[in-house]
Length: 565
Image (cartoon, rainbow, N blue to C red):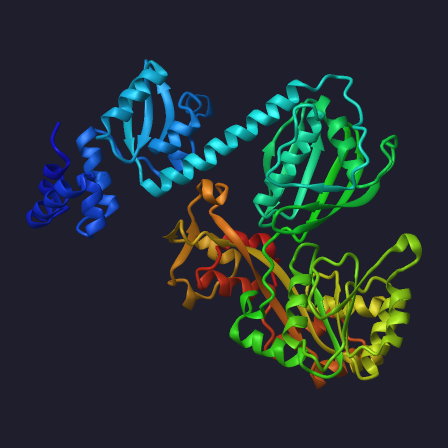
């Protein structure tokens, strides 16, 4: 076998002078030659891997292939050994095991693997960084899978409810003891995985033969495990106990809440249980689990739209309404707006259900319908609390809408949300709630519709040429069709989606004099939309196209999140 220095020199990866200097360094340090050359800056890690591949007759293994490693094969090498030697077993065939290594010249490690596995060793070379990350993640998944299997093995068909009065779940470094009920372990593992991935929701769905557990990451559900159907009663009972629900009631829907404490934060969890033909389905909404950005400049606004939005949130009175479906980032935008205008000189009060994030220096009121503390009741009391700015979590009924309008007409600034498809239909929705047109036109300052689109993974993306059919679906202008278009490359780090993170797209309708007149005249939604577009409003679809052309997202994602104008 040729030495690595010769191979690197023959393939013009290094110069002779660099090789000689590295050899001298090696005599003093005792380090590997390739490692020295990389440290000295004479050689890239990529070219070193190419050199190792030539030396061993193998190809460098890709990041995606690393994560395709067979868990059964990986377990043949103990985790401690794998981490110490930076090796990962990928697959097994014909009496040989394929092992990913950074240094294929490490013969003592190769001999040790032969003894551990009683198999011949084939080498695939991989980046040190990628290999280290893959080893951590894959062995973590193996441990998790083992814990789930262990828990499931202790579940029998008669598994019932856990006798536990706990209402607050503490997740930390401590592990659930072996004496604990198996479904306690499963529930903890589900919650830990959801929190680790910054997911917003957990779906536990029964079918005929199994329970599907999915978590929502960046707005899309990803399956994480499939316990057997006989574990369902135990899992649901555990969640009912934690959320103070009736364990015996299996025929009716139930709603509850609980708290999860981690070493970093406290998470409020809303629990919804719905009876289905195969058993009870559970959906958990995790509030405060994601990474919250309360800076308006980080929320996806274009410079122009950010300027418009800031102008209106700094007005002394009037109404600002944000619309969009559940999970579209409305609350985050409102919180960021409050943070932007917060000062010692103004009194800001919020009325929410639930309070998703606690803000320093702002008075936040949590609704409790069960004791009669609802939006309309709370608002009547808050009017006597001398607020300057009021945030109403959602305008749901005529009474809440009436109070919000009157409050804004008496010299106060009101923020709120409405469920509507776009900005023009938001105005129609407010009129449907019973607000007289002359009052709505007088108090409304700005309406903004918002959606979240997944962003392309910046660490794993490629340029491509969309088809004419794809371009036509979005009505992308001819002048923009020669632009560079990008898409994400699916891998383990982005859950095989090609996306990582989300950004918002906005449709901002300023209620100017012309728009007020249309509202006074009770104009329909289409008339309002046409007038708004003439005034410079860009639709959600157009905002999505801008994100595509700037390389933030792709065509499929905008098609998923918006409708044709």
